[in-house]
Length: 212
Image (cartoon, rainbow, N blue to C red; front, side):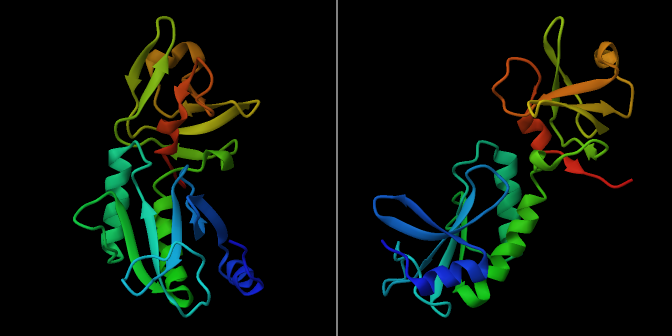
């Protein structure tokens, strides 16, 4: 489906983009900072179902939907569902997705407010810099080598101290931990999950930035 000049102007105005999800289904879309988690937006047809085509004007009633089934972290899913409840979204009898209906003119602001809270649940590791302070989430486990095993570092605080070629980031714990004494009390996180060593970046994404 070719996008019209009017539709492109709406995308630009509301900071959205056009997305093809397959099978000829077209949507306006907006990203969260969580991989593969994006809002899909379509106007409503007469049967109160999404049209699966681009909206034509900003005053059409649209459905704003966020499918959580792509997530493999149930705690994160539950946290997003709670945010949805706060903003009075629907989730169809506890299904793992949230949605609401509104015009583009009014609904984009609500969508962005929900997205901001979701983004605060999941750290954008690409924006970390040396000196940043983080606090790990519940159920966070870090890899120790020689021999390899995991140790619980839940809720501990630390400081970003170095990067290795955008592949690893090292975070130094505030409280001395004998399991990391050999590495100067630092945990190595694998930023790509493609390396054989290091703690999974998924644990780091669950952390939060702190100001102290």
